[in-house]
Image (tube, rainbow, N blue to C red):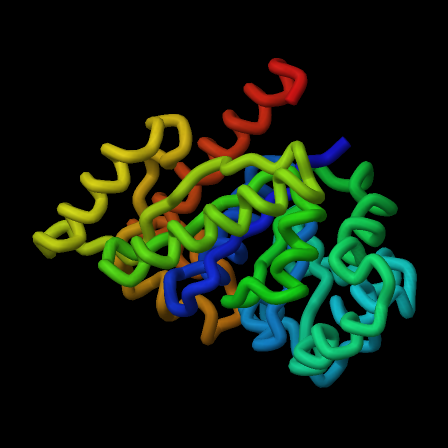
Amino acid sequence: MGTIISVVNQKGGVGKTTTAVNISAALGAKGKKVLLVDLDPQGNSTSGYGISKKSLNATSYDVVMSDIRPEEAIIKTAYKNVSIIPSTAALAEAEIHLLQTDQRNHQLKKALLQIKDMYDIIIIDCLPSLGILAINALIACDKIIVPMQCEHYSLEGLAQLLSTVKKVKKTSNKNLTLMGIVFTMLDKRLLQSNEIMRDIKANFPPSSIFDTVIPRNVRISEAPSHGMPVIYYDKNSKGAEAYERLAKEIIKKCATDEKGGK
């Protein structure tokens, strides 16, 4: 059975979608069969894979609302071993409609359980909030990856996020665990960034922080406008190399958990 990983941070602009797009591509390139679920109404993961939103017949909105079977929304991307359930702005309406739905926080879990065995890893790109859709993702997944910029407000947001995770774990998903925090858009020349990174490392066990750090890199920024993950846009860039290392860490953590029966 596959592992479901939510890439989550309620703070916007931290490299969450960039991380979801690029780890899914890097995992696929390493032979893992991957499904990326775009659970953000902005649909940036969808466009990041070069998929036109105008041509879509089914999206994550239809899946969450149980209007279709999840496999009906799956599209194969142009990149090795990666498929996607795309998103459009219509997903923003889901939070309103789900208020009238029984088991509204469990809709995504019910859908993904139908297809979990078809993939090695399912990546959920969450929207920047802690509303109903984000809670759906936390209940549906086995683990979370938290992309984080090394700045003061990110530190505050991390505490809020982990508090929510703790509540979800207690009430709805006892198997939910933190796979790791990954520092993104890091400029090691900035004193504040290094200080915040040291603070977090001092307060979290080493196993909960990825060794790989994603640097500020122009190729990472350029790739989405070409509808390409960075490892295909410029495989020799520092950004591509970083995401390939991160994918290796994810594979290793998944393998360790399987051996431990988690």
